[in-house]
Image 1 (tube, rainbow, N blue to C red):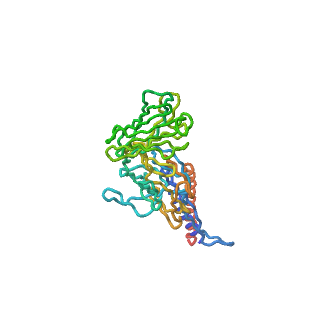
Image 2: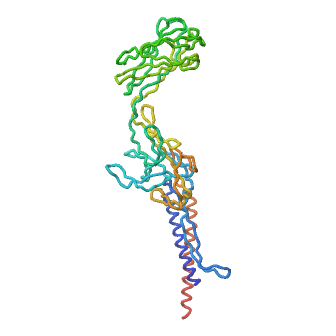
Image 3: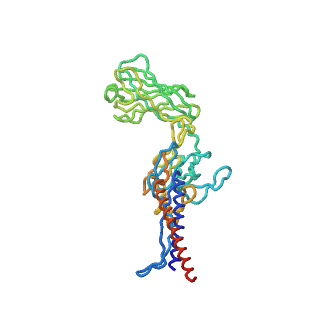
Length: 433
């Protein structure tokens, strides 16, 4: 029994070391594979009988020891859409099982991956180098994040609609000395179709500390002169305010509307209407604050415009796609605007090493791994997102070659046991001769 037992044990050793060599070979072959997790070998002994008086030869089995939780090196990538996970967690990904009318149809099963080398394909989906589609929480056109579902992210919003101007801000200084020539500041605004128009703001002095402001919109289809107001500064206002600051706004004409209140610190803002053929467009013109040296002032200096700004944008076409550290996927447009279309979550498991490994550095959940917990990056036990980077394989070539030498020697040693046992069995058989 002992001779046959030693032969069986040696053969199991050969099998186990063969599996170890296979794991080492696989690791070395995938040493440059993005997101690959190496497989070590765990040797488990099995006994037939062992007590205080006798121990019979048993066997050994080489089982895979997964390293799904061991971090690989994070390396910077030239792809701005690439992402690496610094810490625990997985990307939620989808696998296409076919196509209908040229669009992919996705497998209903859930897949997970650490391979974050994502790029945008011809259909606008974000896919990694293994062909898996990145999934995320969708964001509707109103900017609301829907956490009730995770779906493949697709970039299909190629146009950013124009936003008409509703606010103009002006900071300027009017000369304290009476000027015979009116001073004109120009502002710009966008209509509802994204067209750009000019607004002339004409300041003319009537008395010391008293100015008239006239709003002119040359492109207005009804009347280029939209109206005006009277501005009182410093001691010319009732009640008086700090010298050089706006105290009161009154005598509105045309489509101009006065501010509701004029206490110190309140916004010194008027509104006017303009019509460019699409109906009245209401615009608020901010001149600063009452009694504060901000916005439009009156000091002893030449007329100058310090700052002029407005909201509203023209039509925008798709420019680029960018990722944020919190997982937001934003579409950037050539009009300077951007829109978040999705957020990339991370998925955590109680025991990630028990996940089922699949082709393309992907995984599937198993009963032993626990449920998939979908959460924001850098929260609830998952790592952070590193944008513009990828996670390399966690294989250490030097370590693998060291294990290769040990496995080779162990395999050779087991063959020696088989040879020796064979000779002993042959001697036993020859005893009767």
